Length: 85
Image 1: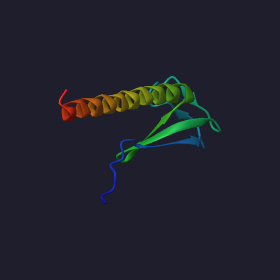
Image 2 (image 1 turned 60 degrees about the horizontal axis):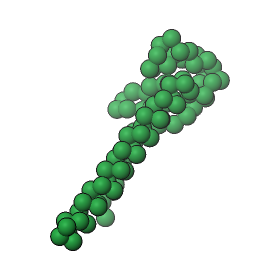
Image 3 (image 1 turned 60 degrees about the vertical axis):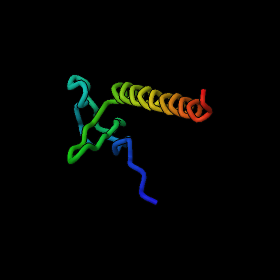
Image 4 (image 1 turned 30 degrees about the vertical axis):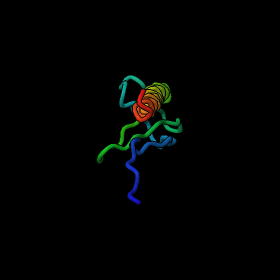
């Protein structure tokens, strides 16, 4: 059986080893020792402060919920078509 395609990019929370700036908002500083979200895309790493991480994760969840809802709608439509209705 073929491997499933990963929908989500590589992401994890890390403790900053040095001072960083948030990739979404350069005014947000991530201090050494603070937790931050690290998203790896292609060959780069982007760091996000916890405030922006919460927004990113909320938006991602909304997008996943929308896709999941579409699956349910498509499955019901397919069932109706098979039943002739």
